[in-house]
Amino acid sequence: AAAAAAGGSASAKSRKVAVVGGGLSGVELAGVVAERLAGKASVELFASGAGIMPESPPGQRDAARRRLDAAGVTTRSGTRAIRVSEPSSGVPSGVPSGMPSGVPSGVPSPPDADDARLPSAASLTYAEGDFESRTEEYDVVCWAVGQRVEAPESWPFPRDRRTNKIVTERTLRVRGHGRVFAVGDVARVGDESAGSPGADINPNARNAASPPPDRFDVLPATAQVAFQQADYAAWNVWSSLSSRPLLPFKYQHIGDMMVLGKTEAAVALPVGDATLDGPIAAALRRAAYLYRMPTNEHRAKLATSWLEQGAELAAKEAPGILKSLGVPLPDFLAPNNNRP
Image 1 (cartoon, helix red, strand yellow):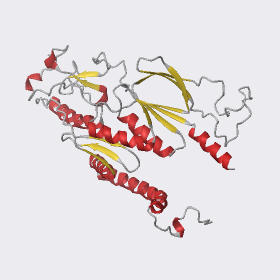
Image 2 (tube, rainbow, N blue to C red):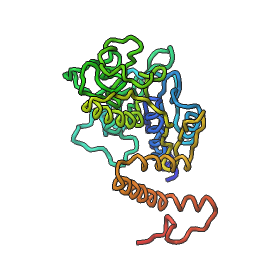
Image 3 (cartoon, rainbow, N blue to C red):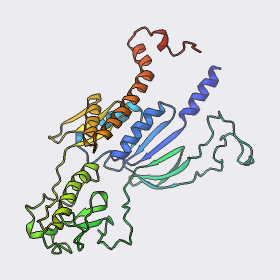
């Protein structure tokens, strides 16, 4: 029985999850997946040569690295994903690897077979540094690399050749279109001072209050950019209808927030390299989300959902926490109390 249990544990541990992408999304995803699986599978994070979160503040990056290490995530820095394809071996999905590949499709595999391939299984081909590419199989491959602009090609707007985003003036008005504005991930704010094409299209350019900061066109693809652009766009729509001067967009960075687990987060403050992490940062992150909700009704719904999640987490984790502290467990909290 002990050998069987050990074998089952080893088989469960042989499950593999790959997260491709070392940015904020990939790091958050890898940490949460590892926490939820709780040792039932190994989690590997594939990051570029610059490592995880290369554009994030050092303090936030260090907090994320500590969390990944604590969760048992293996970080493969300096790797480049080449392709994701069907599993290379001949074992059909859902059939245990110990069974011959010629098993008829109508014969179901044992539901409790630990070594059965999952329907989500895939092969990941990647290269490490200048070495030749290699292919490994994973039960799940999560892709967290890059972003795709969802702007139909049929829209008659100028595009940035590299990103395919819609090019706008500093006022967020689409170049060459007096009544069209673009914000968020779909927009690339042009820098007319650089002498780019279309720089003189805006008839209100002379009304711009002040020049933008250096590298104004390089903005992070985050919600806080879109939120700030929305205010400027709304004002400029009204201004264009009222024959008033348009305001050039000015981005004000207010810090970065990321999830590091059920009860932890890392918040990079917009003051030097100050970073908060742990439960305090998680509370600050949630307070910021509540503040950004458009109405009190939205805030109430979100707060209620968080309270319900907190109650469920407390009921689930309380016995383990009390036991680790040496506190005797009441009968109703004991995990094996044989209650009906």
